[in-house]
Length: 288
Image (cartoon, rainbow, N blue to C red; front, side, top):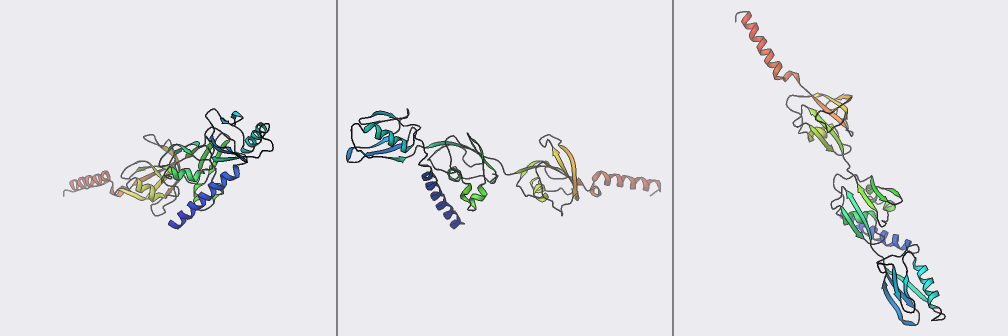
């Protein structure tokens, strides 16, 4: 397991590095980006600059220069044009030293939900790891990445198994929503504690009954009715009967099932009392 995690960590680092490198030619600058600007043979014009909150940088012989919304190539071309009258035959180099962080949000079944400021090129898997990972109840196969252009589905189970093609690079303003990977069922009748319970997908009848404390001593485990429940949160949920089963058959459960465990009437105390009463009457009638 440790080897697998180490391997995934290395793959994540490589993926993030190359994911952002591939975007460098189209990356548009904004406040917080750090630039290195160099003019060949003019060391006094080699400067490290940070794009200000207003989107401008200040450069010798040019003054305030708006770069927000421009690519690195566009900044280089415009600087060259503006410096050309002062420095003939110049060669300008512009390098993005450090990209500004992006702000994202992660909600739902995550150990530390909230807002995060992360570096450009960070992927969904990386930020989930930064947030402490998914909870045990998380639906790992259907994570929603909400962004301005729509919703992107993320399958963390596939990513964790090595398919990094689905590990999307985050954009500023993204929101990750991790829903519960559980199903809700109601258990009633001859169980220790009736109620509505959350169980994992793929769980079976025994799992649902275990959540309710198991059958009582008077339960008829060979007569268990399963309904498609309606309004499980109501005090007395109802539903349409789907099938009858037994404890031994142990069928799989689905979202919204209402399980009713019947009473074993052989041990029904009211029947026993009735039988004893009847026996007493018979003895009286025959004079015993």
